[in-house]
Amino acid sequence: AQSVTQPDIHITVSEGASLELRCNYSYGATPYLFWYVQSPGQGLQLLLKYFSGDTLVQGIKGFEAEFKRSQSSFNLRKPSVHWSDAAEYFCAVLMEYGNKLVFGAGTILRVKS
Amino acid sequence: EPEVTQTPSHQVTQMGQEVILRCVPISNHLYFYWYRQILGQKVEFLVSFYNNEISEKSEIFDDQFSVERPDGSNFTLKIRSTKLEDSAMYFCASRLGIEQFFGPGTRLTVL
Image 1 (cartoon, each protein chain N blue to C red):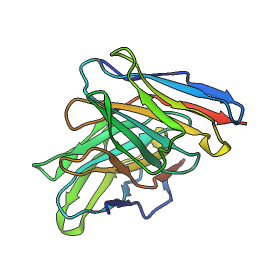
Image 2: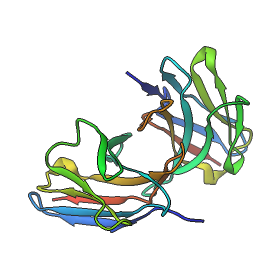
Image 3: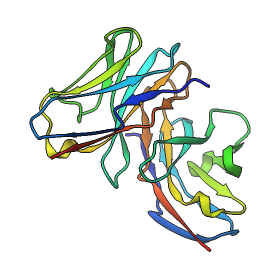
Image 4: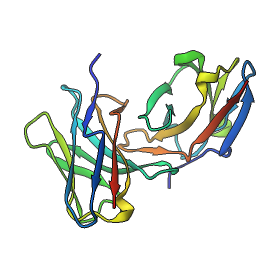
């Protein structure tokens, strides 16, 4: 069955430091890949998505993600974290010709000043 | 920019009561979804709807749940007899192409 693993439940980084959030998926073919951000009590905001083509994708708020087929990974990165980036981040996968998004368990990002 | 809207933003109900959560998808979208997020847990798929019928549902979506598109613009999720464990954030989503667009969610609290 299709699954998404986000191995880090919590991550704390200092403001201005770089960030990498990990995401691995289990699926035989190349899925469509997404990262969402959720602030407390809020909805889901799409940060970026990968459908095909260039494996390094740029998103909003200075985020980027790299798809690595050999590692079945789609890690989210940001070179310099801002205090406003503190939130929960969800990786999600959609099977090709599929219908439903499958979400990872999420990673809570804390930013310390 | 068009967006998915959901009402109400918060709903408090007593166990055993019926609730209806409402969504207005983006107008030209053809596929509609409900997802659920129990507090502190991941977002889970409930049901998808296309061409006026359910196209896929999860094991969570039992006989207590139903969906409807009553008037060509609204998309509703009904829970017939709420249980404590139905307390969650419920997200509606819609799509035309690959990307699903999410609404802001309805927080349901069952007492």
